[in-house]
Length: 532
Image (spheres, rainbow, N blue to C red):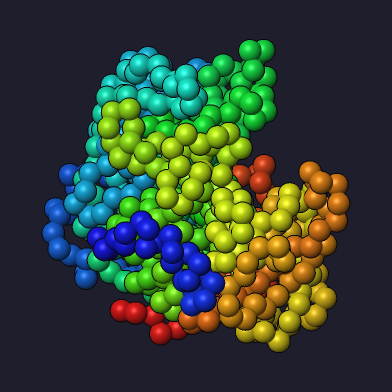
């Protein structure tokens, strides 16, 4: 575990650290037994996994790992399967932690509508011949039970469960660090899931991938039952319709399932990058955003830290650790948009467990601000905007994209575009989507050099005006570098199949090939001279 800096010292570092120094894919198919059933796979009992030992050095490389047999049974929302519905509660569950190391235990708390038999299967997400994951273990048959209804805090709207433990797994030393998915399946085919990460903080890989669990929880409206569910954006009206900000929660709990299939909002941004990176065989390890919050993982130990998805909700320790990393000459890459936007505070659960409750009061008065200030957008905490995310990132969120629009290339001679053959003004259709970033002259910027690699006009759906999206690399004076894609659609071009049709990016083959080459250039540049 990394050493922690006193909170007051951390806050003073915001202004200093961030402003001044701051192969070929194989197409494989699986035969399904019948609709509503998982494909036939031999269960891998946990007992068959080798005993815990200090075997980290003997782990296969990422390339070797991804040559092992794969599976598509991790994928949520497939029409041939029965997704559990929150209102019926067929089967749903949550993990006791977002992250675990070798030898640590992850408990799963699972509720089943009736005393059906069910199993838990754990998958590691990667390439695996194009199937996207590998089955790591499957539990014995378990007897389900309906757990207690969630409790809603009247003051904050926080919805939390206090469910009994249903099944546990002790992470074997033979499991590589990665993004994992636990899938819960009843004997009659209903299923849901929950993700977690396995970390290896003792090893400084060339590349660290951070999975945004704080943002996952901010958008988690479980249970979507027409009555109870809330997230940090909305809740239900008495009519059963989804209301506006007046109905939202001020705090959200990690002690509850994710809504619907169990896949968090924009999970595919993260899985797309993971699948692509592992196909290329990068030396990569993984962490949860909460690992940055509690100091379990120190980003300054890695030459490059990638935030592949939508990473909007950041605590003060998260912001401080990223700032220290850049000040130490490390590199950060954000492949989505609207990152480091809201300040959040982690709190104890009603049962006393640390960091299981997340507060974000936004425009409501925060009754217990921490030393960074109230839980609202970072750029508004102080009148001088000195904590604006742009001081770290170089650019920042500037709008909601009404319709996908082309990304327009600038600086074609820059190393990011090397080998792509792009021209100045070349357009990648539909690549700017959902949310966008750009430079804000009203907010402080870091000392150093900012290079704009794309500038694209788009229509803001909320302000009914034309704005400019930008893709940028900012080289901080202290030697660290920050890349900002400035659009949600960048990581979704890294794979050919989008596991969520509702979020599909209809990018053409030329766009995909060039963005993949640019992303490979980014990884290569940022990991050069990686610490070992």
